[in-house]
Length: 380
Image 1 (cartoon, rainbow, N blue to C red):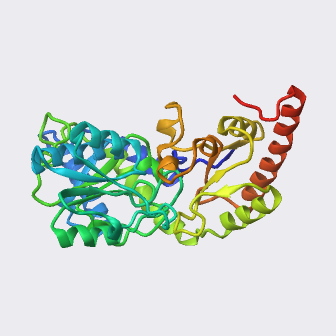
Image 2 (image 1 turned 90 degrees about the vertical axis):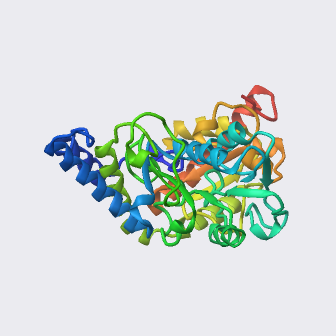
Image 3 (image 1 turned 120 degrees about the horizontal axis):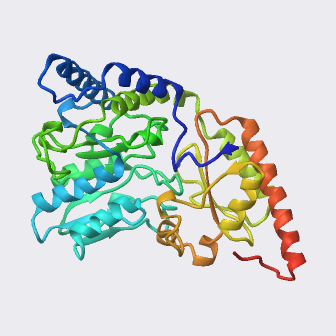
């Protein structure tokens, strides 16, 4: 199978797997144990915290290890609910991941200011178009998981800092694909290992120094900010993956994707690329394909050995059009024909060429099936 769904998850990198196995061999004890052997594991955990802080350019005391971005996003809004008071309003990007949207609704239902992409920005959400009156905090993702469109999080960080309000940035799709420089300027930052070649079930949250967390209750692990025995092996494997992709991504560009899109649109009229011309991840293309539903395209391409998706994996069973595409003004009929293609660090030109051929062949086959069934449009 050729895998074109890296935004959903990524294969475990060999370097990460090796680090995980070695850590489980030598650092499997509970880091909170009172004996010296446990203290050695604690020291290894703190070394990993220091290394992540170094990569992000922040004080390591800001780093909270957790189970991933969903937990981190929930912890941010729980913290804000405690710190900002019962009448505070928060600005939330309309195209955020469901783990941000649902957490915001849980803690700030009725007190959310939707931050929407402007009509002329192609899906980018800019701070200069926002009514800041009454906004006490902002959550704005760095890169969209469905479209790959980049938000100017640097501008958001500066705008929030100027107004003295905190910014949360879900950087799950940015980390591992684009430079880490400056991400530490965000007051709160979430990331998860399985989006950049690490294991599932481990991630991190950056918080401001001195701010008490509102995450899992229990013990005093993670400086009292997140209870629960730390997954030291997973954390070490996450760092190994991040260091590896930081070297791998330097050779990654959007050229292969752009060549694929250009040829596809020439060969298959009616294909629309969402966010065309806007800053986007080098690996992600969100397409509106002609005539057939996303599910039909996905199944047909899987038969040919290609794994693609329609959008966020965690929302694949929700029914109805994508909230991201709806926020971009794409009508439900077009949204029902959306396909998300997301490559990886080792995706070759030949893989893109093969995907192109598979899409064109699938279209011919789907049209033939529709004709044979006596229906112009084949539905699910």
